[in-house]
Image (tube, rainbow, N blue to C red):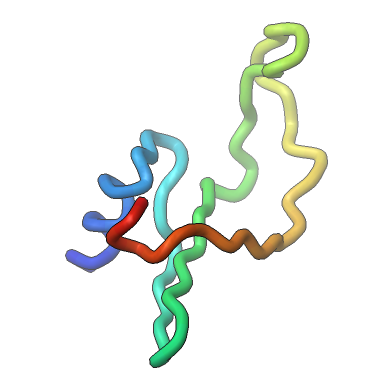
Length: 69
């Protein structure tokens, strides 16, 4: 689980966000950013608290090489 902590710190994630899984191959490194199922958040639009998540689709994001982050 140490690698999960490394990525959590590297990506600047704070609770409730965290790294759920890490995968790698010769050409790419993957990390899953996740939150606890059922978690409610404050709306970034209007500031209303305890709002349910309405979109948790998996997405792919390409970034610079890991050590260029």
